Length: 178
Image (cartoon, rainbow, N blue to C red; front, side):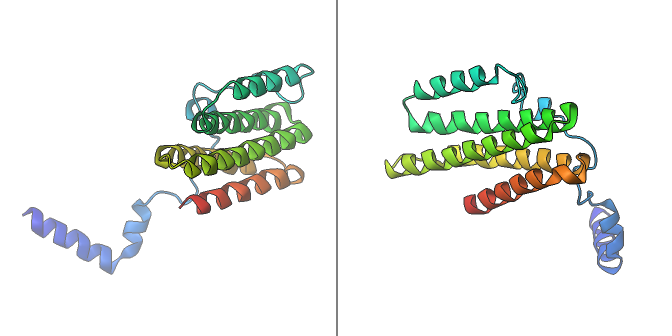
């Protein structure tokens, strides 16, 4: 009985592919806003580039990175910093509407991603396994891509250039990781 049902279902799917397409998920998963708090928990924006004491935050992060001796751990730390800069950029773009500082935060996120790749290369030279680190980076980049796609849909046309540029950079990094 089940075999006949499955055969009938697959036969219908071959004859009427539009039935199967109607059930498939939407190609645009970012129809609504993305909840970055849930996506990157426990990362929150906190102080952003528009805040006068933001330099203290970045100084603290630089000192913390300096005190991490393992290149592997530094790479992981910079993945989190790239996520943090993206969450800050989202806050600046969508809540504060400060597109200049939002673009700066996206540039800083991209710089952190570059540091991650540099550290991954250094770790690979030592012969250490980087599979877990690359999987963490890939997962983070996929999440960051979702946020950027959501941002593109919500920001005005004159502010989309930096977001699209960062989206292209993430796509390039993802294609290099595969």
